[in-house]
Length: 188
Image (cartoon, rainbow, N blue to C red; front, top):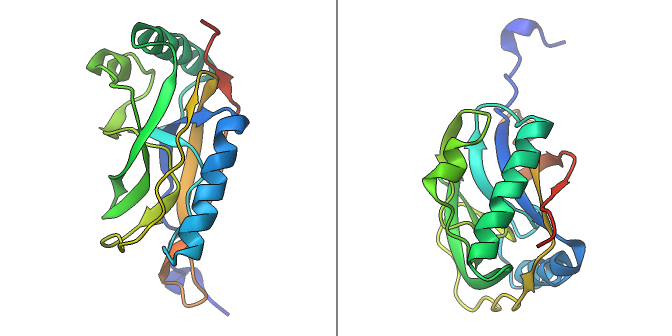
């Protein structure tokens, strides 16, 4: 029997602010994640089809998410009114863990992050939609991402943490996540 003395502490939980595309935009991304998995990319199903924007000290409040959704809609309206996915890229979220996915065409100004009602630990640039979690260099010959664009999207809090294996060590590709209630960006 394990005692409290020799228990492995739980892995830290990352608190993320994420942009969640409408499900119609997520479907081609899910198919792409499946093709990455078929192409032997480890971690192809280790991150949901959401775009992390910031690592936060704690979850945003409902009111904070609503305000941020309105602010993000104004930013997007100033740049054409919709999100467009571009070429694939990597962005580091923690401890040499990178998210791989298509970049989004949005450039969030510092004022957006400063207006959040939580302390921001880091900003993720470029913002990209997660399709895989990556710890090392990308292998060659990966299928290209789908061409997608969308207007409908939501902001949400997301908790993300690695799952320990039976030995208590961290498994590089086993994670759990939970996305909180969605706060949809207002219509144009």
